[in-house]
Image (cartoon, rainbow, N blue to C red):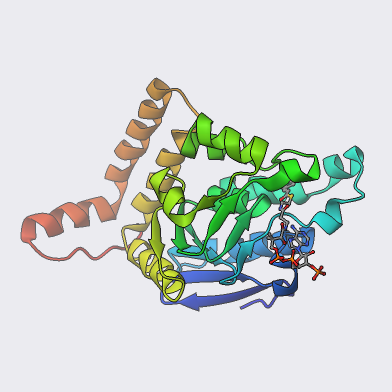
Length: 259
Ligand code: DAK
């Protein structure tokens, strides 16, 4: 497995785990870190032993945002030319397997945007979600006004973006931003357990299920239902659909082939 400078990577069962590892900077997301993250996720995405991924940080910080020190002196042209943006875009479009964010502590700015770009969020009781860019004289730049608003609604999103309101883990679940909350001692283990459950399900159906749910954010209802129907029909060309239904009828567990 490739080793990196800013992240730690390991495989647990069928789960690829990526741990952001800039503890002194509270896992601030620098360009090198984002490049490494994308590279590690791509490696897991093409690894047939891996069915799901978990991105985590430390118990203190999932990530305290994009690296302010890196951005502080940037010009508009620097921002336009920096491949930083492409790394974020590719994270949501190029990775086909599901990704779970396991959020321990601070989950701010770009850190919150990174967690929201994942498919699910498992939080520790100490997690804090926020978009504090307003304190720096900017606004979120990687989905923080869009994914956040779709998740929590306009009222809460406006407070977070305009007035640096932070959400506790419980609030994040209550408002539909996070899936589950666990004690800080167990949230990562629980996230990996959830990822393992998903990882051993029918692989093609998992991939298309992720794609179909994500379509809900991109299209009208009519178009979205149309896309869903086409993906649904496509699954009837897989051996796994035959196996899944045969196993149900025979009252035995299904054995997925990913074919
Ligand atoms: N960047 C760089 N360093 C950071 C950092 C950050 N975001 N957050 C923390 N650090 C560093 C601190 O500078 C400090 O370093 P030293 O001074 O020791 O060298 C170290 O981490 C520990 O931080 P603190 O001493 O501040 O720790 P505390 O426990 O007192 O406070 C905190 C924790 C999380 C409340 C505090 O560190 C904090 O407020 N951090 C900044 C949070 C923030 O404003 N985040 C939003 C950043 S703007 C884009 C995509 C995304 C973005 C932009 C563009 N494109 C696609 C173009 C995103 C922008 C952002 O996220």
